[in-house]
Length: 412
Image (cartoon, rainbow, N blue to C red; front, side):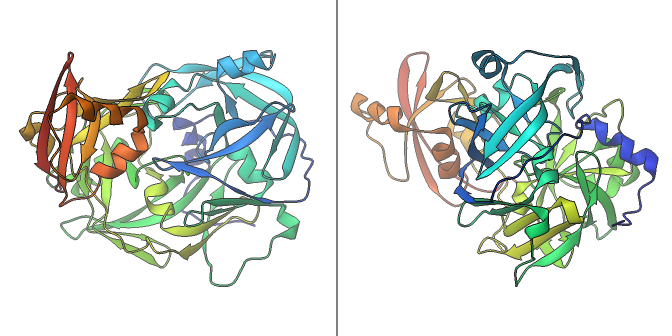
């Protein structure tokens, strides 16, 4: 089935900006099943086995062209590299090598895939920014072999053999242009000044943001950035650090669904293979507002709105960017503080450690710090992500503890 998306064949090759192509492998499918997933800062983690291994914690990621294991897990399983290639990414420079491993068996969600070619690649940046150990990524080949039903509201994943799939009632389909390992869909966007445009966006279930615009596309459509922009600290990704800013759109439309005043991220630098016809990435900041069926085999994305469909899009209400330093996943560090934000005005600095948090006055006594042993990065992030909240944080700075107070508000 062909889907017209307004892209040339040459443009499809430019998907290598984000990821590189994988080999087609043999599939052996068992009866499908439904499993629960853990949603951590927008990422979907499920358990999978590799060559009959113990259960591994892996993020389901349509934006990864290979299923990927960390080098440590690959070594633990005795997997040997059989060649390599460069892992291209949206980050500028610092490309990394994918070490390929062939003839691997994957088992997850009641399904088995045999004869798979997977890759190994360090995923330390996910550990730091998701706040939990990540053994690997289940990439685009999973979406090609199965219809993937991801229900964000009930936190369940169902893998369905394509021949057994019947679209359920209440879902609306949006066309997908599916290539060897990735898929594109069209979004219509309106800038704050009223100018409208549309473009092809990489569908990235592992992307934790709403929508990201490529610099080359922005150069052709400068009205999208003609507004107040929030300069953001650099973030990590395959390919190196990303230099970005954040703003808002007047609206974004996906098929028949329209979103008002969504946040948007703008890349400040071009990858060497960037092209203005590839607009950017759409992530789970949009997807999580639906019950989603990724139907790559039939070239469709099936959507059914959930209770989050009309929720507003927060714009870093605290101004704090968080991270951890593995293996200490309960030490929640301030990675950066955005200038002019509530946290910056309250005196929070990069390098501070969050020991405790409350919407009510915290005691200055030492005992409150014991609550830090139970904190998780996701818990702190969610606590800070609602505008209009009174926030008290107990911080540690170079061994000295103190309490700060501020009221969260959207920075855009």
